[in-house]
Amino acid sequence: MAAVASLALVVLVACGGNDAGQVETEDVTRVPIMSDASAQATEDAASGAASAPDENAAAAAMSVEVDSFDIYFEPKELTIPADTDVQFVLPNKGAAAHNFAIDALDISVDIAPGDTKEVVINAAAGEYEYYCNVPGHKEAGMIGTLIVSEDAAVAAPAGVATPPGEATPGAEATPAGEATPVSAAEPAAPAAAAESVEVVSIDIAFEPKEITIPANTDVTITLPNEGVTLHNFAIDALDISVDIAPGATGEAVINAPAGTYEYYCNVPGHKAAGMVGTLTVTEDAAAPAAAQEASPAPAPDTATTDAAPAADEAAGEAAPAAAAEPVEVVSIDIAFEPKELTIPADTDVTFSLPNEGVTLHNFAIDALDISVDIQPGATEEEVINAPAGTYEYYCNVPGHKAAGMVGTLTVE
Image (cartoon, rainbow, N blue to C red; front, side):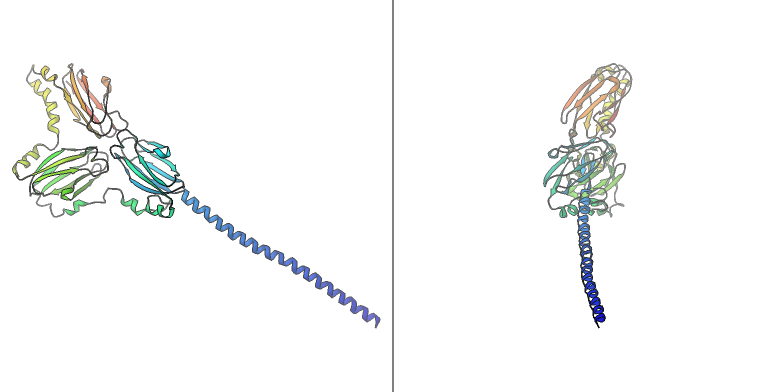
């Protein structure tokens, strides 16, 4: 019996020891369970925190494009979020040198024709002016407004600034290319158009600046664009607006009552730069037709200058008298009028050089060591006495020669 009692006591002690060990084991297994939950929560928090930097990175990667044309920006107004890095892509699609400047942010970026520059802007909320600081370009309308908004959510869709990969419908609709086919409002006019007039767009002027057509008659206006930038032919009073791409030819059929109408280019800055003309509609239908055929452009003025030496040569000894007459070469934006002229050799000829544009121009003939700067609205003079030959005159303001501001002087 004593042996049995001892054995039972040993068994009870052993069982008690196992219970204590089990409690400790349960305590030990609870700790890793808590750690796993904690680790899971940490991972969730980390993934949430990781998404925020991604959003910030997207905001920092925001990009906008501001195109430079001759002589305007596209777009002229845009919105970006405040206190955020925004990359500005600045292609120069014009033929002249341009610049993107924001004085309040100490930004000034020169952009050569055909080149593209970039600048990152991070600005406080407010309104900022951007403009081209090339002389005369701001005055010609090359200016825009940058709105920096605290409301980044509104800024992205409402402005031009969008994260990469997203397209802004507004930005696509902004360019003035084919967005306003007003000529479609005149589809019924083709057959009856008995008269035809040509108005040439150059940079930045119309040729001619005055035309006359008969009243109450279909007249086809042919509109070639011989410039290097987009132009437009608009007559507000007749609801006419025709966009003309460089190298293209547009048409408009006009049938209007007698009166005087203004035609102009509605591309920003071009009207202010002098791209304006006058349409006279007269009851006298016979005179305009003949007059229009006889004078499609201001060539008569040019021909007068060129014809004087030729007439003098035909007259024999009359050339020296004509040589004393001055010659006028007008600078406009961006062209010379005329582009060709003739003067007598070895004779003093005074060149009158008015600048009727809104930007600085220059009259240069390298072979004769001539270079004359002409401020907008000013008129300079230069006396030329040259041997017989052919000389190139051009504007040496950066980009202007490339844009076609070149002429030919014949000395004979």
